[in-house]
Length: 326
Image 1: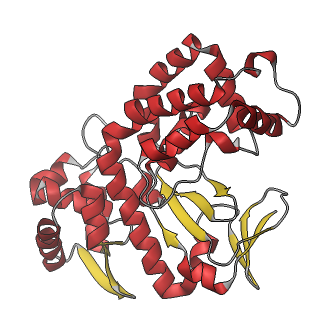
Image 2: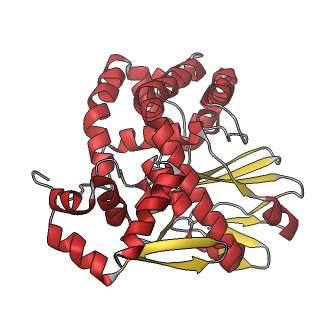
């Protein structure tokens, strides 16, 4: 199994960060797989998969490059550098472009565990990788980035709250399949049979949520390590497409109905603001109406106040039925 040795100081200094590049690479993996894990991903693929496949058809070298670089158990290092905190997509992808052809070919040989096909024995692999990643960012991620950023920020808030409630062990156990805090400074990062790595004192340990249901780990030398994980399911789903029953919207208002639909899972006001894009004051007012009507309830969890539908709210949502035509 993949095992990282982390001292207490390094773990205490670790933090959750946003990475536009990680979100782009996760989206590339989803395009490569071609199959979504929920209706929101399916709708996104329906929009963008034809264009992506057409681009690869027009560039067979890039098509083979991404197939090898993503691999089955190892991602080519040059193709997926570890983002720094606060780094823009353009800054991270510049490191892909700056990778030498020799390094790119060597990384790909590791992915294949053998020699490269003749098609990839060339010097422009970093440029082709950069062009493909930039295409995925510009065409399939950046148009949705503001909403995705709010969702990712909500996940980081939820995880940080979880740290205050149950400590880092509880958070690491729940990040993604295969992660587990084993005690005695040992963190299982995945189920792959790789040599253990010791996180040096003073190194950055970053946790990066992405909206597609995928995950990986990466590092830059001994200075920076990252665990990329899928954000919470309730946040990762495409809420802009989640149907609000028409009858429920007519009864209590579309905005309140949307909040009531979301609150099938406990969420804080901050998370609701992040997911819906509504202002804090607006969300607070609608929650007060739903509370007074007995449709939601709240409780304190650490420093956060969480809201969730009551039994009456559940009955109202179920009785309203799905939105017509969905």
